[in-house]
Image (cartoon, rainbow, N blue to C red):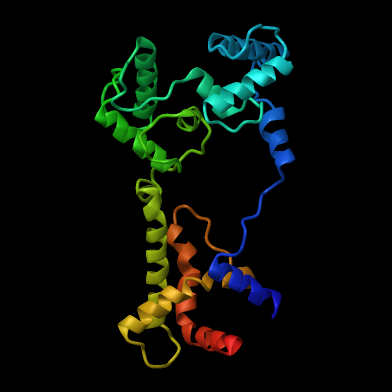
Length: 283
C-alpha cells in the first residue's frame, strides 16, 4: 500500500494527528521570553511588572514578601495562583495569568456585585460597545443584553460561548486577537454557534460537489438525486486528500471566499472517474 493510500485512510477515518507548528520550548521562547514592546518601553518597565505581580500575589495571600525579583518564592506563588484559578500550571505569567490577576470572573446573576465588580462590568461593556457587540450605554450591570453581547463576541473569536467572562475572554478582549473584517461574507458565519460551523461547511461542500455532478461537461446520464447526494457526501472525504496530491491552491481572497470551494465543484465534475479509481484501489 502506498504512502498516499495510507494518508487517504488516515484522513477518511480521522487517524491523522494534528501537527504542532513548533515544539513547546520554542513556544515558551516566542510567547514569554520576548516581551511586549511599545514606545517608552525600558528595563524599568519589566521591574515595574514584577513589582505589580508580587503586590497582586501578596494581596491575594499567595506571596508573603515582596522582593522585587522573580525568585523561587515568586514562582511558587504563581504556581499556587494558577492551580487555584484552573490555569495551566507552569509558573509563567502569560496573558491568561495577568488577566486572571487583574480582572474578576463575570457572569449574569452573580450573587454579590461589589463596586469593583461593577467597574469591571462597565469596562467590559465599553469594549463591547466600541466594537458593536453591545448597543446600550454602559451602566455596570451584567444584564441579559450584556450576556448576549459577550456570547456574540465569544463566537466571533472562537471562544466557548457561555456568556462567562473569564481569563481567556478578558485576554481576547484586551488584544489577543486578529481584527475581523466587518464587510466579509464570513462575518455572518462567525455569529453562528461553534457546533454549527462544521455543519455549515459540510453543507457548502456537498452543495458545490452536487453542482459539479449535475453540470458536468463530461457526457453521461445524471444520477438520481438521492444517489447524487450520497455520492457528494462521500466525496467530501476525498477532497482534502486530492488537495494534498494535486497542485491546487484554494483562494485566499477575502472578497471572494466562495472560490475556496472550487475544488469541490471539480470533484463533482469528475465524480465517475474518482469512484472508479477508488473501486479499483480497494478491490
